[in-house]
Structures are given as structure tokens and as C-alpha cells.
Length: 167
Image 1 (cartoon, rainbow, N blue to C red):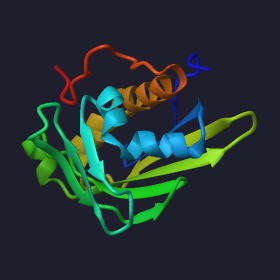
Image 2 (image 1 turned 120 degrees about the vertical axis):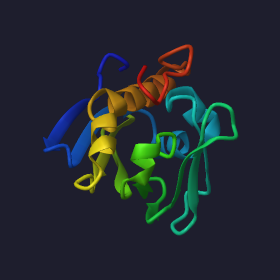
Image 3 (image 1 turned 120 degrees about the horizontal axis):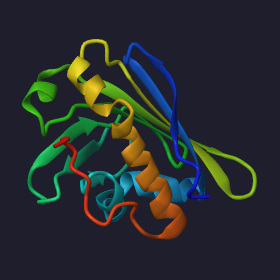
Image 4 (image 1 turned 45 degrees about the vertical axis):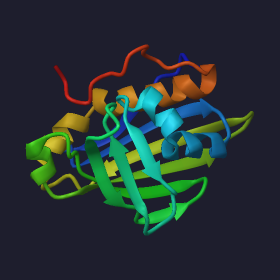
């Protein structure tokens, strides 16, 4: 099923961005890919996530160097392995880090034949235009295609980490 690429479903002036992808995996496998560093390093621009996945606890992203903090927020809602809601600020860029936090909601829904629908909704971007532009389109598509490919094939989409900051 790796030939089915996620596509933007809805964008309202870039303030709400919704992306969906079908993945041949269980909800728990997708949850683990979102919340465990051994997975995120392989599809999320080389970033390692650090979290328990529980509401009220930190969710941190570290750059590939393992030291530089790219994201540091507190999980708002958590219903493992189906829903995770987290504020979003891109600390790797000074201008984006200065913007108000936006929000990312991961929703995992079981479908037939061992397939799940993963929906990533990035909203509350009204006061964060640089962040909205950065994550729009190819930003989230790179992440979701990478997650899908990794879970379905066991291999990363790209051999080297795709930079979080476009060249």
C-alpha cells in the first residue's frame, strides 16, 4: 500500500491544515511510530521524540544531534492508541519559535483489512503565519509519507534525514 500518498484534504487560509493517509498497520503500531524515537528518527526529519504519550506530560523533539531541542510542549489530550493532541512550536527557527503555539491532533481510525486512517490536523495557525507556511503541503506530506512507508516496508522513505528547514 505504499503507493497511496497522503494528500491535503482541507486548508482554510492555511490556518487549519488536514492531512489523511491510509496505512496498513494497527493503531498501536501507528501510535508507537508517533511516540517512540526509534521510529521518529526515521521519518520526522531525523528528530527523536521523547514522551510517555500521556496527557499532561512533555512531548519533546530533539534534532538529529540529540542535543538541540526542536520542540518542547505538554500533551493536551491522549487516548492511546487512537488520539493525541499536542501544541506545536518549531524551536529550530527563531521566528517560528516566537509565534504562538499552534496545535496538532493525530487521529487513528481502524478500517477494514488491517488498514487504519491516520488524520493529522494542524490548526490554530491564525497568529503563526511562518509556521503555517513551513508545515503546509510538503512539510506534513514528507512526515506522513515517511511514517507510512516505514510502517509498511520497514524501511525509511529517505536514506538520509530530510532537513526540517528547507534549503
